[in-house]
Amino acid sequence: MRLNILRQDAENTVLAPLRTHGWDATIEREDQEGDGQLVIVAARRDATRRAALLYSSGTDNRIYKRLETEVDVILFRGQPYMVQSFTAGVTKPVKALDDFHLILVDWNRETSDTLGIAQVLNEGPTEAILEPRRFLSETPIDAIWARLSQLRSATLARKMIAQRALVERVTLDANDIASKGEGVAFAVRNAIDYFAPKETHNVSQRVLNLYYGSLSFAFAELLASPKGSRTLAELEGATKQGHGLYTLDGLKEGVADFTVGALKSGFFARWAKALSADPIVAVDQKPKKPEDLAALPAHSWFTLEQLFARIPELADIYVDVFDGSPAWLRAVYHQASNARPGLHASGQKPTASYVLLIDGSGRLKAEDVQAFPGPLREITQVASGSNANHFRVAVDHPDASFWYEVLPLHRSPFERSALTLPLYGTLQDYRATCVVILYALSILVRYRPGLWRRIQEGDLDHFRALIETFLTIVERMLPQQFLETIIGQPISVHQPGSFFS
Picture 1 (cartoon, one colour):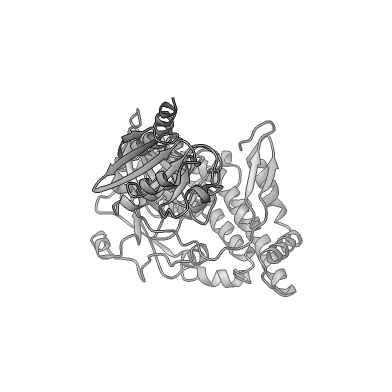
Picture 2: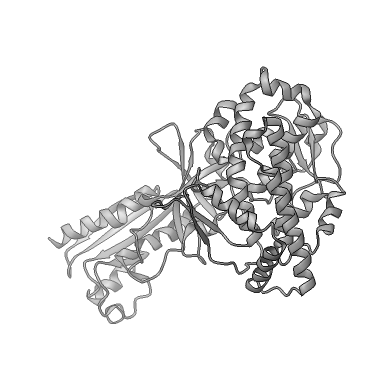
């Protein structure tokens, strides 16, 4: 009877999880001595691991000592009872059965190859932030604009900056607070004027307004930071060196290959320095012809197709318009590959979790996942039951309680949890990607009327549908994102009776 219970527990808690992670696992032998015991053997690649499972921790010391010569770890069912006494002299690990997931994570790490070990995002020093601010509104975007409109007041902008300086432990004198507050108020007024109701504008005007409105918001963001620019004049000095971006036709003339690169001077470089602890990949001057792009540093330039690929909210229309792979993956907790919810028997929280990264397009491969940011390893493609590609990955989080705390995830009302490829080497900021796309579109509007006309009403009108969808997303997403970075506080917007914005 007890051996039957052991077999069932071994199958559910040890063998099934091992097999899920690619181990060839089986019960090697059974023994009725004492209250009963099993020895489990598991093999993966060139590695073999063994575990013993005891009916209870209160097992004769002689059995413990014999088993430790055969196995890597000894597991016991139920609650620990006088474990130190029964295991005296035993040097191999002795763990509760419910802690097996922690052992599995270690075994996986020890037997993993290098596939999927990506860079760990360096987010720079941690700063204190305010608790999330919750807005309750039937129309979330209206609540966001109402809060932004308050910052048109220099007085309210100064109070906001003083509060941020207090929370972030930055010393600012009265003159600094006054000049920064006036600059924030002026920039926010400009941004609000540019983000006027879209019904009064055609697509061309919307592109230009949203680009310059976003620049104004970026000005306000830099001025609002207690560690940022002190005066509006400082930022105006940066813009005198240009926008910090350049465009160039690709080898194939058209929209998809239209290229946007980063420069080491100008406003974008100034903004990027504040966004990332690591410098972006940029060049000193614009290349003269498309053929020159191949000689530039990798990740210093991107095509419009590659930029749109970083907007998760464009998922379906991106696949319809472009042939390339998206540059984002939906991240969800993989329940089947992790331990049961709650603490392990030892009270220890796991230092790694298994997550599914989902590519709805079905175009990404396992080797593509290596390029995504975060402490990812053990990339394994698993069956999805659909046209989508599912990749199970291990996410290490030894210093965090949850896996999502160590990944630079993008969240929005349209896409709950997306992991995207960085921009210009280090940027993980969604709003920066949107600004770069808006810059490219503004160049097409102003300086490429022939190509823009084909987009508007000619053979490239499918790009118009893509662009209009993108502009709608920008109008919803960027005001909220800039509000969060200006006030230094995450925003949670909810409709009455709903958890979601």
